[in-house]
Figure 1 (cartoon, rainbow, N blue to C red):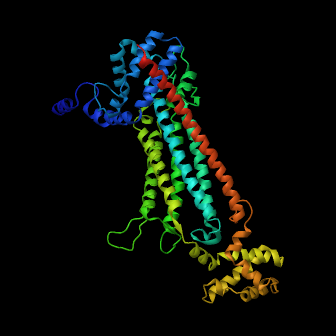
Figure 2: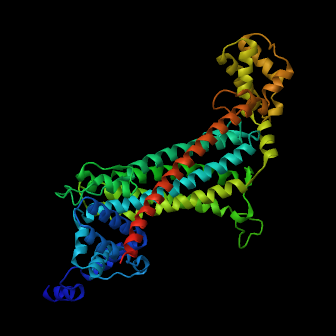
Figure 3: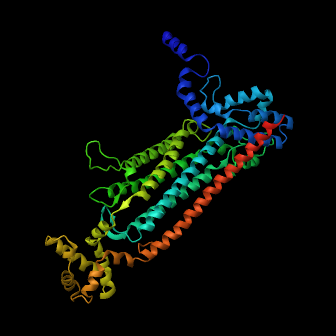
Length: 505
């Protein structure tokens, strides 16, 4: 035991951090931090110094000296630096360099501030930008779907329920359903953004501070929309991470269902859509193949997004309500990755949609030959024969069964005489509708054009529905753009303070 312990001590060292702790924890965390946090950390430093000076907690001369040191920090150096165990993390490395530049007075930059409230602010500032990028990508998908749907308002197709032919509809009707799902995904992401974009600054380690700081000023300078009032909640309330991960997970699951539909529709058997050449791959051995690899990878990566988002929830599960590492450095990349990855998948999906072609003639031919049209025949019998829907349903259903029993499978074999015969069996009289009315009732285009009520596939209804939805997309884009501009303006103000310090003598 003694020899083994000596070997471990020789390898690990006797001071913090041990070799293994550095390799497994600190170095990976440093690499993530330098890639994501350098600019935000400097923005927090600038904002905190401005606030301390305004509150009289550092005098003008001290603020000038500290500010000049901040302005002279070479951010690009840190973004490409390697981990140095002399400094525990990026925060301490930058603090050391500020003190080296400005002297011990730079230590006052940490008045009424902890790595706890600062770390949470860094996470939130990182996530909010990734969320805004994701929402823009989602809206670009909606714009692509709108363009596609408007081209296919009259493209007749069969709709499926329980994976079986159900009723005629249009391709635009399907796509509008997907647009509406994306609306709800946007609303969830928007709500998550509102939860994320709240300031933890001023909470310090846990209980705020005895110094008369202004949390409100920090909120304003860092372009947060609100303050997390309770200081314990500020450093412990990881539900913002769970809300984002859940919204991203739901968005991925939702999009994945339609990706699966498109992959099915792209098969030769379905022959609904054909993807453009840039999005298909030819087999290395089978020259006829057009493999829809773009959507296959999208489906696979969506599953990765779901998995990473679930990792966030799992890491938080059963942790105490307090400042704890489980919700901090180790967890953050598992949230950043799905945010970035889903943004890319949205971009790919939008491109695939607007460039794919549709087999309109084949879709309508399939619809004209489908028994999915007989629902409207039952409705027609209710309208013109003045019978109950259940009676009409029996007439049509019995006629379909009789045809099936005879071994015939084509809608063209479903004749006026056959249905009239079943009418005699059910309501004890022949039909009063004409054979022309009968044939019209079995026309899929007539089926669609009759569905004019809210949410239906009729062309006029669909045009109005798409127009209203397009207005929502425009409003959503304006909201995202406004948030982006607000953050950019705040960043410009902070850089303005740094420029003043830099130019001072």
